[in-house]
Length: 374
Image (cartoon, rainbow, N blue to C red; front, side):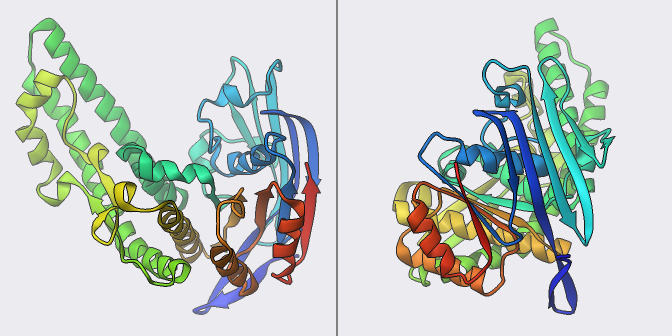
């Protein structure tokens, strides 16, 4: 059994060990099965053979959705009607069988030990997991929604109340926006009706803001520590939380923006406008950071996510490295190898195009491993 790994500040840290994985019609993979090592597992092969898709299937198990393609039906293999992800894992010394499946025209189902979840939110958090991928660059280059999703996914994995608040907020926001459109279309206005949505939006929005604020107060120092370790402390980086709610409470913001909202037929104030600002030496990293600096920033961000989840849950998350050795210089790779040697990580999955390079790096960790040619 792989139960207690070590103690941190008198807290038992447990690992989640993915033992077996079976995929049927998932993306470009017709049928494939694996028996995994408890520590390091590497998928090696040429580009396009499906290495990243295997990692994505593991992510799908944890979060109930693909990391790379949010449209569920597009994860079904071309020409097929369904996909199945079937896994056996061990958590806290107990075996769990998880099956995620989707058939065209039907709702996706996730089963735990044969029982279907009524709500996906009940599954979230069972398999703590962090992915580090080249597509993380979207966090820098895309809009604020991508960065909000990052914050929300980390908090929601550990806090189901937060997830329910988000669901409630989004539902109320959609209703308020629909009402604003109705007012404009019918040249009418009902202040009492609108005030109901304002109150609901304010209640859930304020709580979300407070939870995001607390999360970032805890998260930012961890991020800064990892960035210093990866970059050698040569650059000064900053992670800043921007929200309209730092200035005023949400109810006041909604009342002040009423005339504007009626014109644009959309709610212009709220936590759905929040953002994370990424800076290097006082400037936006998107414009002023080199590729290497952006990579260091993103890896530090994801390693901070890993450590935060570990501290909060008392479990070592599974870690997925997608094509990472191809994107990092030797110094950064060595930093990660050192962290593996120091037992910072639990079970690790790696995709790479060069089998020899992968094995050479993995041998330096002195950990057990398996290599799967794809």
